[in-house]
Image (cartoon, rainbow, N blue to C red):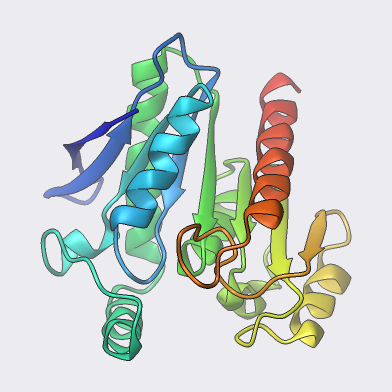
Length: 225
């Protein structure tokens, strides 16, 4: 299953790139994939292609294109530093506009509104806000910035995934999220940060598969409600 780079019309003007992966059969639904702090890199492209292989139309908008077209960062100290700087410069409003544009594009492509958001790391917080601000069903993976938005309430079904050995997200933060949002399923896994990043040291195939199944089941339920 291979994908392609397309362009999206940004809601507030201009265009950004996005990675699109199509299933071979009629899509079961569509997914906006919200990137980590490292850009729409090989990992995020492979995530899109994996979801396409499972029957979903998947689109990852390149949030960093607003700063530098095609920016992809390495999983090292320099990449982390640059990625965090890009996140600080972009804020959350602009990525959410791009999620909205991607969701609208997917809905038009499908001809119906079965669209959800799945996000990882920084994208996990973007996915959380897609549920609270855009009313899109979402699954959030290890979104450490969620704790800054616990005053917001989901307007669509939402579930969250966290690693119990995540050095970036203390267990107390996850407990705070559970307490603030008792209606949101919060799943903990015997893994670290980035456990969905298969092929990398942090990846955990068993945890990734369980979280993926829970995410897709949750979105399918939201679409059929």
